[in-house]
Amino acid sequence: MIRYATAAEVEAALGRAMTCAEATWFQYSATMPDYWLWWHTAFVFLVFYTLTPLPLALLEHLAPAVALKYKLQPRVRLSPAALLHCYRDSARLVLLVMSPCLIVFYPIVKVMGIIRTGLPLPSIWEIAPQLVVYHFVEDYLSYWIHRLLHTKWAYNNIHHVHHEFRAPAGFAASHSHWAEVLILAIPTFVGPAVVPCHVTTHLLWFSVRVMEAAETHCGYDFPFSPTKLIPFYGGAEYHDYHHYVGGHGQSNFSSIFTYCDFIYRTNKV
Image 1 (cartoon, rainbow, N blue to C red):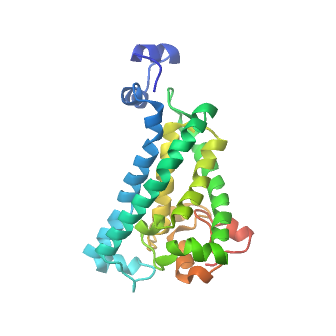
Image 2 (image 1 turned 45 degrees about the vertical axis):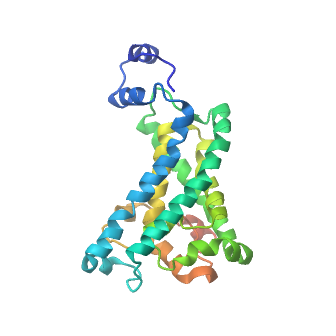
Image 3 (image 1 turned 45 degrees about the horizontal axis):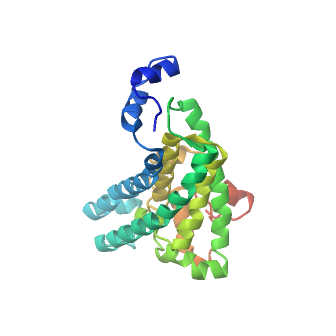
């Protein structure tokens, strides 16, 4: 909630006119409690988890001649019913796990000032380095958690659920045991905890992370994908191999980049 009652008060405090984005944010959030702005995290997850894999899912079933030539495992195709079942169960599970986490962490976030909600909005020069830090923190922590999930006990009791899809699709990105959803959520929140940010940056980071997870699990390798221009980016082909090998595999653990696999000699391409 923004503590100023009018736009004039905001501009007087800023010492300048608000940008269009700031004026829009002021109109949207001026009277909205910070608690509800924090809960936008769940809304962002649901929207991007729903929309990101949808075009490929539709393309595969409506125009298979176009889609399947880029599919990494073309012999495996999930029916619309199977995709819908995966989406419904995964979205429900993540939201059920996320809800108590948002409730528990909000007082910590509020007291420590980790997430701010007011004005001014962050500039691109503030957002960009924060997102870089969040990516590397998340990727490094997730790498080691993922390796631990491939130990015998953790795989048999937790991680095997995620590997039920040997040829993954975008909706399978969040198809996991509830304990894995909880554990792997930690690296996503650590970055903003280490480098505090504006709530809009937090929501942007969360949306980007959901899209990246859907992309690496999409099961397609498009030669024209812009992600191929990102140095050390793993992508769908890299992670698809991890699913293809399954529980016995001890390679390609990275969630975003490949540097950890390269450093610790667990990369397989």
